[in-house]
Each structure stands twice: as structure tokens, then as C-alpha cells.
Length: 334
Image (cartoon, rainbow, N blue to C red; front, top):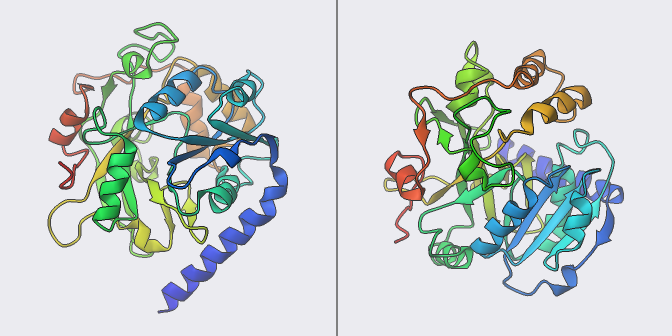
């Protein structure tokens, strides 16, 4: 009872915090008046993502996203201009600290509360491409209709780090190619998952980043479990990125009484060639990690363009392969 009470107040504080931070956002192109009842919405914070933007928009349009609500955090490569030219995108801009805004979640929480209420909302990063069972022939509307029918208000996904065979600054394909072509490899094993008792969410770690950058202390490796797809209510709030949210029942994206729950995979395209230059910039800006020597060393290692591929690496072949490896579940959705 005390935990539930404390979490209720925590959620209210997060919503209040986001309400205050709304003043940091300036609408550049607001097309939210075109959003209709039942539309599927996508939310993201971006900075200098022109290299990924066309593929990002194309992927989610193909999945059935009706409208994108994007916060541009001070891009100087044309990302904000490109977004503003898209008929299905609304753009807000800010140059305030990404880190001080809970790594952008204060801004997104406000937009979700204002525009996402009653909609199925997908909250992702620019370097995350969602795949799920049958995504190649059934769009998000079919998936969310099934989730509604089965009484599920959220769906979880594992973030799967993709990487090239060679050094990070020497890709296997042209820079404008599909990231899944440039980064076709991933780690199929070495994952550890526990259930967090307080928020009742899953805590998944492992993969190539744990293997290559956090081998000395894998428990410090990035968290790979997320809850990106939610039928939103203005009273909801993400706690830590999209790793967990409140109320905590929304974190129950797993089956706890036998069987399986449907899950997706976020193909993480962080390791495109520009990661080498971006890592040097982020190490200087210190906007993407807390004051931690461990994460500073992580960014330092990326600036050296390491080779992440090893003999145990697996080449990506589609969602059925991920299901066979136990990284994705259709959860009865056939």
C-alpha cells in the first residue's frame, strides 16, 4: 500500500514537471488539428538526424503511423526544416538541456498528455525501428486492434543493437542505404533479464554493448527492455526513458500465468558510421549520460571506431528469425 501511494505521487510529480517544462517548447509546425480519432501517433525527440530521418519516417509510415509529433533539440543539419516540410509531422523546437529535461522525456510527456490521450502512441528514438510478428503484412492498426480485443493497453519490446562487420567508420554499404543493410549483425545471446519489484518492469541487459564496452561490469550496461507502444491516457507518465512507466500495470508486458505475451524488437541503428563523430560530440556535450566515468569511457571507446563483430555474431534475417531465437514473441497473435 505504501509503495502504491508513493508511486502515485511520483507519477503526479512527473506530470507536473512536464507541465512546467512545456514553456521550453516552441511550436514550429503544428499540424495536430489534422489528428483524427483512432489515429496512431509516434513521438520522438531528435537532434541532427538527417542521415536517419528518411528511413525512420518511411519505416513507420509503412507500419501505419498516421501522425508524428517530434521535438527537435537544436539541430543544425536541417533536421528541423525537413521535418517541418512533412505533411504528417508536427514539430516543436527547443535548445534547452536534453539532460535536464529527463533526457527529453519531460517534453514528450507533455506532448503525450496534450495530444496522445485516447490514442495508441508509439514513443521511440530516431535510431529505433520497431518490428513485430507479421509486421511485413499486418500494420499497427491490426496489431493495436488485437491488443484492444485481448485487453492489453501496452506492448513491450527489446532493443537489439545492430552493427557492421568492419570498423564502425567503414560501413559495408553506402551511407544512405537502409540501416538494416548497413548494420546487418547482432548478438543473439548473452542476455540477462530480471523483474524489478518496485515498478514491476523487466530489466534486460546484454548484447554487443555489454560484451564490448561493459565486460568488466555487465550490470552497468544499458537497459534493453522498453515499453514503446501504449494506449495513452493523459494521467500516464514514463519514468525512465521508455523503460518503465506509471501506473506500473502498464509495465506488465509479459505473461506471468503461463503462455506468452506479444513483444516486439526495436532494431537499434546507433552504430551507423556517423557514430564515431557523434560520440566525440556527445562526450563533450555530456547531454546523454550522467556524470559517470564509466559512460565517458564508453563514448571514448566509440570515437576509436572499434570492430564489434565476432565469430558468434548473427546476421539479421527478419522477425521469424528473432522469434526462433526467443527475442520476439507473437503471443498468440496469428
